[in-house]
Image (cartoon, rainbow, N blue to C red; front, side):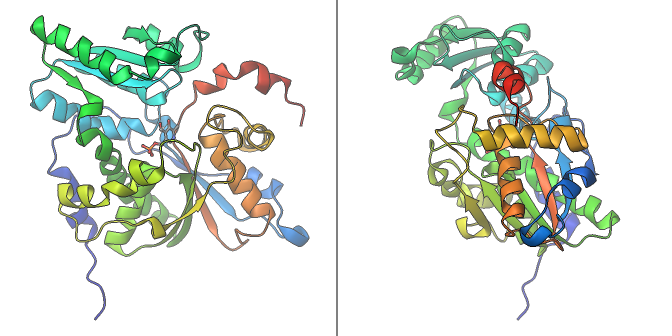
Length: 348
Ligand SMILES: Cc1ncc(COP(=O)(O)O)c(C=O)c1O
């Protein structure tokens, strides 16, 4: 018996039953990258595939990024449960930390940011924007970072004694799965844009993460002819704990007929290099190539790594000339400034 897929309206209704605060600039654009495509050749000089970019870096909220879709749902959850203060524990370079600060400001909530490995770091990139946005910053050194949760819980208790209702993000399940929710709608948006361009079959490249899994959920539930390549940007946390462990949670939250599995995504983990936050030569090349062809700025930690993977996979012939690639640009732009010297020194 053929599988019964959901209609667009049915899937949309499942997500839209959740409370939501509109704060992202949507829909994000889907644009061609013809010059990048022309600059890339496969084995034997084969032409590059058609490359489109889905611009999640255009969502607003202090330099944009994938988290804007998440916070539309997360902020509604926090507000509706009567919380007035958010505590977030993140690394000093976190995009999430910065975008939460922007979203909290828009909600009129107090935002307390416990930043790991942050003491003595240059105030640049996301850290600078966190400061400008007025977040209450707690910059931990390496030793303190190992006990960051204890540190945050103590702050929480203090603020609760002062009468605040505090939501410590790391103590809740919702923030861990909400990243997929917004991207189910993002998937519907993308499908509509592709349909308008007459494209049914697509190969989507993105960071191996929740956003990509949201798109997979859309594809699996609508029966779309999309395939996915997820690029790993860090060795920690393991993807299993971070995303795959939550496939049932998201299915239950939305009441979806089907969820996602690890096998829905081709995982590429060979582009991480030394580790998160250390830019490889391939990433530096990718950043310069995307910028000097189609004027797309990618960042050294996330989207530049995905771009490096895409370029390499095309050059090796693993992405074929007749495919249509969608590059999911998930944001992260402030990190460009945190790598100013290395990027400026790069000669190719
Ligand atoms: C720029 C960027 N892209 C992708 C991701 C992965 O996020 P997610 O797992 O929500 O897709 C992050 C996470 O912080 C990010 O900052």
